[in-house]
Amino acid sequence: KVDLNSPIIFAGFVGAGLVGPIAINHIIEKLDMKEIAVMRSRYLPPSTVFMKGRLRHPFRFYADEKGTVCVIICEITLRMEGLYSLVSTILDWAASKGSKEIVILDGVASNEHDNKAYCAAEEDLVRTMADKNISMIPQGFITGIPGGILNECLVREIQGLTLLAKANKIAPDSAAAATLIEALNRFYEMNIDTKELKENQEKINLEFSELSQKYVQHREEISGMYM
Image (cartoon, rainbow, N blue to C red):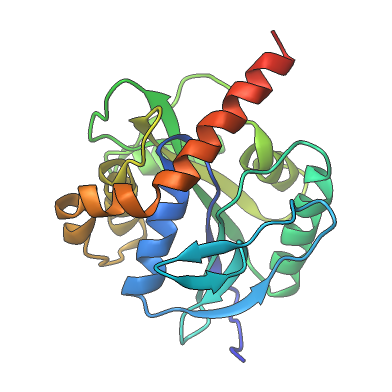
């Protein structure tokens, strides 16, 4: 067990380029974080995850040794049904641990990565991030569980923001994940090495290829529903 001390929370969910899960997995490894909880819900699809031959729950919570940094990672695609319940559970848990800030790492589907990090947050924070070379996204929509969390943060006493990078539409994009971690390093004065993400792109692509295919299939199904 880890005593949590008003932790900042970083979260990554399945999205374009699998930027969120790739970045969060890397943070877990580099900060030597320990699993502290899993999400169980009737709204989660009956799936589990194998990674490097190891079976693990697809929706997990981790903390560092000091209890000042937590991460949430989900490695399955989620449908709209029940998202409000999942979002409420996450933010209720965060509030119970005294957390004041949750940061979602995600990708924006694009033809190519431009090595830039973008943000969407409340006005004061956007100005502060601009000083760290993190650009504001002028307009757009954030959907799914990331959008649900950010929307709920607006009516709770917790600050919600998202860091975004342009990412490959159909394949895992570890370079985009590295860009977001480097933005975290600048803004939160962290020191997470991203060399492996940049140099082992083929290996990472292979490890996450099946999850990426499922995400592309999921997006095609969703787009077909709203044509």
